Length: 99
Image: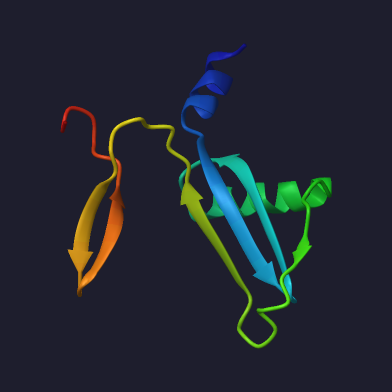
């Protein structure tokens, strides 16, 4: 394996993708660099594979179409929480050495 390929693989992150469109939902994971162009290209590659299972939602008929993504972190440390405007929300896993 070439050093360049190893560098590229080390910079890749796993993202969980959710797509809601035309009364359907799909959820899948991709590997991409942490930038919009790489994430978009990885989503398009995955869509091109035709391996995604689309499910009818029956509930999103009148709202705009949307795609969300989040980084998948396999971390056993506890999730940190913060209260913002009276709502308690997860703020992510703490950085290394903070526990």
